[in-house]
Image 1 (cartoon, rainbow, N blue to C red):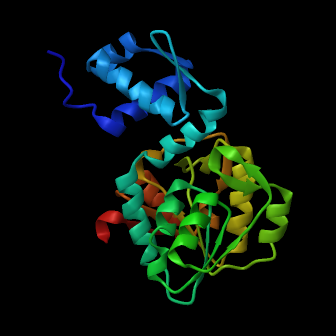
Image 2: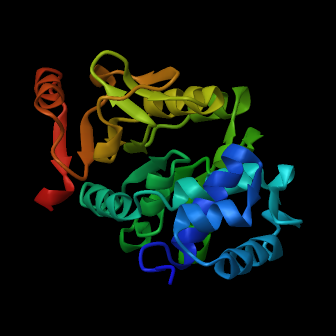
Image 3: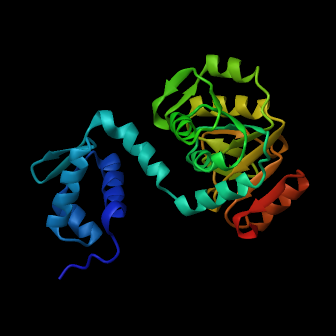
Length: 260
């Protein structure tokens, strides 16, 4: 009998979507073997994903809907390392005081912070649709900085965004990145997001980077910021010794979830 102990529910469907993003077409037989479940279970998963408009059922499997690929990529990012992101968000909240004006980038970690920001009496500046929605629902006053819509991050970027943010001066800026290394700094693969994050960082009095430990000693396409542009780094676990030494040398305060 096939065991279904390890891949259940939403987690299994996330794995199916990741496979669909990579291969475009997925087969029931292959997925069942890879995930260790019955083919009937995979059929039910594919039917549910098709009902959500993410996949299209075909004979023997399913095909990724082109119009849904960016939405899927965003959903998968939002569900990755959620415990670490929530812990980092709680640590970030401890740095925020009533009366602050705080700016959040469009990262999923900043979204985790936006979800609990209503516990402080603050005004927020945001560029991401998801953060704006949750702030509106929770009654947090905020300014939405517009521009060109960047679908993969559900955010606004471009010249209009950068011109507007340059006129604003938040007390604290919170941002995340795809990766960090001493050699390349904080990096991200999406060039439109890189420009928006750079402008956001330049606007703030105190700049706070939020990265889970899986991003250390890695690099992506383009540099967002170097250590000398950041005041505080929040992470879920203590970084490797060489990164800790670099933080000390740059006078960047390290805050870990473990210390909270």
